[in-house]
Amino acid sequence: MDFLSELFSGFTYIAKDGNWKTIVMWLIGGILIYLAIKKKMEPSLLLPMGLGAILVNLPMASEGIVSEHGSITTLFNAGIANELFPLLLFIGIGAMIDFGPLLSNPKLMIFGAAAQFEIFFTLSLAALLGFDLNDAGSIAIIGAADGPTAIAVSQSLNSSYQGAIMVAAYSYMALVPIIQPPVIKAITTKKERMIRMPYRPSSVSKRTKILFPIVVTIVVGIFAPKSAELIGFLMFGNLIRECGVLDNLSETAQSALANIVTIFLGISISFKLQANDFLNPRTLMILGLGLVAFIFDTFGGVMLAKLMNLFLKEKINPMIGAAGISAFPMSARVVHKLGLEEDDQNFLLPHTIGVNVSGQIASVIAGGLILGMLS
Amino acid sequence: MKMEIETTLNTAEIVEEIGVETFAEGQSNVENMLDTLPLMGKGMIGILLVTIIIIAGISLLNKIKDKPEERDSVGR
Image 1 (cartoon, helix red, strand yellow):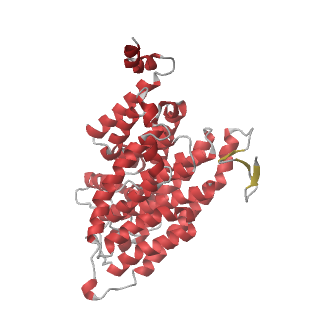
Image 2 (cartoon, helix red, strand yellow; image 1 turned 180 degrees about the vertical axis):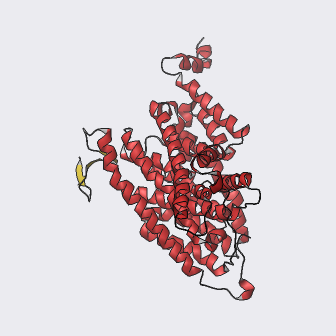
Image 3 (cartoon, rainbow over the protein chains, first blue to last red; image 1 turned 60 degrees about the vertical axis):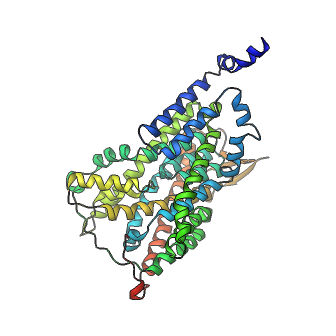
């Protein structure tokens, strides 16, 4: 009988009062896995998070997994608590990015900055809804659509809602093709969406491409010191790519390193997906605020372009402002596709890519500024 | 142990407890939101300034020319 009661202890645990949350987290994990596999939404992150959510909420078993020396706890402490995994992932991301389109037209960077303004607006909105200052700052960074920065900021600020923030950040990144188009169409006219932007490629010297990551690291490190780590690792990856003498390392950073860190990051985030941490009414508010931040980031970039068009002779297609969020390269492709829908000869991709990569830099700066002001 | 820290604009008191920064006790959410408005302004201005400096830096970098055999076209 003792053996049988031990065998079924998991079931009796769930049946106890308050432990229904376990089942809910299993369902949430299942939804994340479904979205990853069936809908192909950020599968590299949502799938490990989904299975991790189930793993850390298994009755009795989870007591070992998330105990002081449990496997998930160890992974979390090794890479999330000290922000190592996001930094390593940034090396891979930096190695993937070609900043050439931005370097040939540096003014595009202003749209990357404009798309991050709404992060600070969301910070105030979160405070209005009763969130603590550190939590408000962590929630606001969701709008940057930059997973590693969201992890780094929420961890540095010791936010109580890291699990919800991370799920929101990566889910909304995957939802860019669904969220952005209606927002863009709502605030632009058909005539504006049909504005053609001729692409005049200018040669960018190899020296410029090599010096760019070094200069950006120095500039951002001086003016936004809390961003130094994030921007430094991002630019390190880019320097490996552009130097021309480390092709093997560049390839490794873009593929093996990025994939290995992604696996560890996805599963270790689940440490924060334990039912008691994740399931509270504030999680829904965070998901809502994250969506607001995302929408307003899109709004901000487009509105800046429309404002600039009041003064420019050669008009900008305002949709490119929406590519300033950090979801690279998805946002660039979404805007380009919208342009083609209106005019199948309107190729916005070179411009949207330039804006999109600038958004990656701007989101890191925004994260550093939030850290600088709040920590 | 609590420390009172005054903001540079003297618009709010932020009470700092060990490891946690929070708003002053007893304030309504609206007052908390108003306390964050200077942060909003500083953040927006900060990101704009850093961006402008980077744009200026890139413009300067673009003056650097390679030798003809080293020149690389954009978007490769």
